[in-house]
Image 1 (cartoon, rainbow, N blue to C red):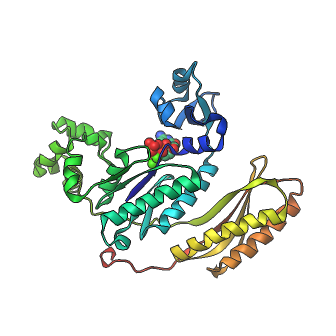
Image 2: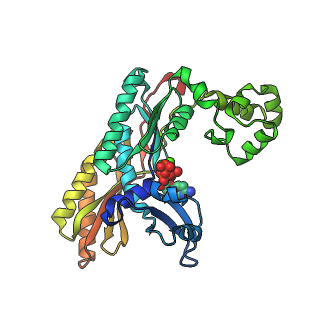
Image 3: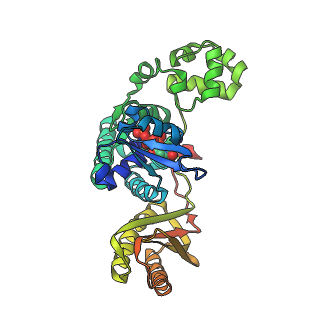
Length: 355
Ligand code: DCP
Ligand code: CA
Ligand code: CA
């Protein structure tokens, strides 16, 4: 299964500001050189309909938006990561193995828990979509098939809020009319070379002589390209080894009340406990992350002998919080987070073919 969130940053901005809901929204990375230099990070579907797309210079986007009610906002990566982490958590709970790819998408191996039954996989996908919507107010697009490449192509097929399932017999008819440039993993350079050979579509690519492809691209790449055209992919869903695990939450209101802040930390630690168990991980360092009402971030850490006790996270972050409040008596906190790092993973034995 491949899950990708729809217009991720823009949807989050839309959710947290009712004044702009339903309007075209453009989220930007301002480079800071001049007031309008930088690029569009993403736009919601209303803004895309006007022609404003990710990667476009902000100046150009503003030109298109002129005279229209379009909202431009700067990126708030900390906030997007906070929500992303929670969504990755809930997807990890619904999968045997999860491989996060970037901030808003992941591959989920659900083979074992569904026993390879596609209908059961669809139920899982619907459950994940429902949770993402009810808990975070977002929609996601999902693709389900027998391998990663086709699942990814399927999740891209219907957006937003899509669910596309491809059974083995449906893969080739689905893929064959795609332009090679639309096949995931085939970039501009390769597309150009393929086009020069007269290969425009997946069908052209699949029927092209493999030996001749090998002369052009070398054995490995030729095989890879040919496989893509037929929807073949044997790569496993592989969890990324994490360097740290963190949970950040937003307080109901800005406060310096230790009980309220600690209650949040305690709530976050419940979440983190699940992660520790699921990842079978031990840690040496606990950190407290504080973001105050002026959005100033501070991190305080303590290192200790290797442990996997969540109680350690709770007690150490409480000490660090007391210290923070002593040192910053006038600051109110807006958000608070906990993090464990210096991690050690216990090897979990998986299927034989991973060895
Ligand atoms: N992103 C970015 N710059 C880009 C492309 C993307 O900063 N050139 C960021 C903003 C996106 C996020 O990454 O919200 C996820 O990228 P996607 O390509 O998945 O795009 P969206 O989620 O915004 O839209 P879609 O609904 O098409 O998936
Ligand atoms: Ca997305
Ligand atoms: Ca994505």
